[in-house]
Image (cartoon, rainbow, N blue to C red):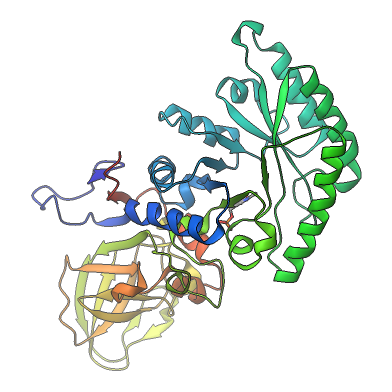
Length: 394
Ligand SMILES: *Cc1c(COP(=O)(O)O)cnc(C)c1O
């Protein structure tokens, strides 16, 4: 077992006891989810997306696990995230696709980061940075052109495709950059919408080839499209949520897809009290006890990513029972009504984990907070100690 930061346990607690607030991350699950996704998609390449600290799970640890499971590329949003992986000693190819207008592409090129390019201006900035790199470095910038095929976020707008392809080809012929990939991202509005985006993308690929480009990676699908629309797979998929074992679909669970949720969010009960009927609980007294009951205090709040919107709705597992949050979730703590169950200070509380083990899922919290499982795991805060299990390759 390795730890990202020192445990916040009181002196004298056993080393194998969970920290007060803890996210267990099962790295073997990440590796096996990647294997499962490779099996389903059958693509030549798989880019494991570890942006935003690996969706809250830990970018470096999950990157290593994903590579061990058969990913051959990593994907992150920005160059800083990519360089942090390099700084941790990760040598695998990395793609970064979202850039500030002042992004330092020199550092990206020096770090052998493949740069996702969404505008003519970015292409020019990469070309300039590559030209001003020391010629002795012999370094050619790796570029992947991102096309907007309907999402209306970043990505080269359709009207600019031809001009960007020509400029990229000229820079490639001049030896300053190599177009290693062409990609896009889809809406997941429906299977039909994703397939329609794939047809628009096909037009872009044809135009690119006419302009002389021969990208080795062609990718459109993130997890949802990769699973539900085989026509979007091309020779590479770019998957995030699935490698963490979570489903991108509201109507299919992790188990339905054969994935194992990697994160278990847990804490230790910080307080227990017996209260009479009619007792108000937490800010605003949005909950009052109906009977004499036992209240258990959980030391996690919205500062730790537990959504306040799930007040009076979210559920937790304690000692084999499932109990609902009662009253408002505060910044640092919330209360659960455990009735007459035997719950003691220090008992393990699981907010979510692998539902197959009888605990709530991140999906349950997403439903309670009117959001998606992506947001539930990604927002887990800095006070929560990450404990890593598995990962014997590291
Ligand atoms: C976040 C992201 C992904 C991963 O999406 P998932 O739904 O988590 O698989 C892929 N591509 C791009 C461009 C992204 O921003």
